[in-house]
Every structure is written in structure tokens, then in C-alpha cells.
Amino acid sequence: MITLKNIEKVYRTSSIETLALTRLNLHIQAGEFISIMGPSGCGKSTLLNLMGLLDAPSQGQVEISGQAVTQYRDKELARLRNQRIGFIFQSFHLINDLSVLDNVEIPLLYRKGDATGASRRQLAGEALERVGLSNRMKHFPSQLSGGQKQRVAIARAIVGRPDIILADEPTGNLDSAMGTEIMNILQQLKADGSTIVMVTHDETMAKRTQRLVRLFDGAVVGDSVLGSEGKKVMMDDER
Image 1: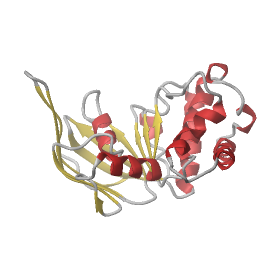
Image 2: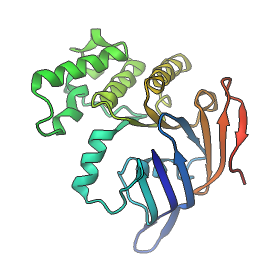
Image 3: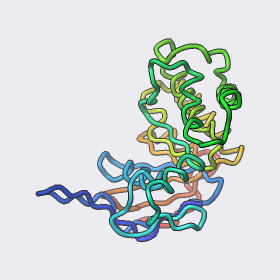
Image 4: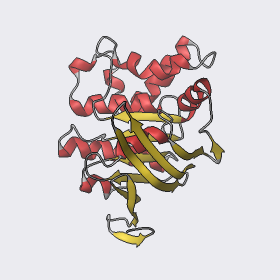
């Protein structure tokens, strides 16, 4: 599903060069739910941005479903993102002046000729029902709790029915009860067939995924398949 081959990512300014990722190889199978952990500044968000086609590697190749996308033009990348990838952010990124329903509908507005206004609203309503917020469609973000805002963000991520969901610290701003609720939703999405990659600092949440990838200084230093209770059952690559 997602393959990164010999990835290196360097950020350059006029006087500074920062190596964010180095010699990184990673393959994520369709339907997997994996978590990515590591200290701040180790390259987790950079890795997620490469998977989400929001940034390009300095060297190496990114493939989606066996298709090399590194040389795609911006319009091709935007189309692929919109059709196949849903994003969930720690800080929700909701538009306060729009209703919950309108926020969820946003990704569909960029699909040319793909849906009428009525069908867009129906799809948005269905997405909100999947996350248990069908009774909040007309509310605004300021009227919601943190957990409810994240559920709206998840509905927005899945409204276009993407097969890949990328989540950057989706429980980071929530208490443990709300974090557990969000993880339950993500696990249901995984059961429905989604491929999910989640960046997290929370070991407890990471242990609820199938696989744990650890980064350090821009490199993969651990890749563990987890059992049903979050215990390591196999280590593929650990240095």
C-alpha cells in the first residue's frame, strides 16, 4: 500500500542544513494500523508528510499501491491526496465560522463534478453518523468538546472514503477517556478496511495498534508487530 525506499529528507536554509530522515525504508500493507513513535524532532511528522504527499523526499522514492509518485506534478499529487488520503490533526483544524456539517463537507468541494450539493451533504451526514455526531451537524466548533472536535475531524477525514488515513497525534490534546474513544473509532475504521498510520507520543495508545515503528534521529530503529494486548510478538528490524 505505502512504500518508502531509501528515503532521505534534508531541509536547507542559506546557512543551515538539517537531516530529518536518513536511509529510511518502510512498507505498510493495505489494512494495517501502525503507530510511529520517537522523541521530538526525530522525523515523525516529516515521515507522515511524505506519506501524505504533502512534501517530497530529497532522495528516494515514495510509492502508493505500487505506483511511484515522487515525480508527480502538484495537480496529480493533489488529486491523489483528495481521492485516497484522509488527514487527522492533533489541533483539529476546524473552521470556526462553519457548522460541523460544513466542515466535514470541505474535502468533497475539491472533487470536480463528483457530487452535487445534496449528495455532498448526505455523505457528510453519513460520516458524522459513523463517529456518533449526527445530532451535532448544525453546531459550530466552539460549541463542542475536544473529543467531539476530534470526531468531527475524523468524519472530515473519511467523508471522501479514502483508503489511507494519516493521523498526527490524534489523542494528544485529549484526556485519557476521550483518547480511548478516538482510538475505538480508529480501530473500527481499520476493521472496515482502512490503512491507518498514527504518530503518537502515547505508549498506551500505540499498543492498541497492530505494529509499532520507532524512529530516532531520522532513522527507523525498531519495527515491532504487536499482539492483541499490545505485546511485542516479532521484531523485524531493530538496531
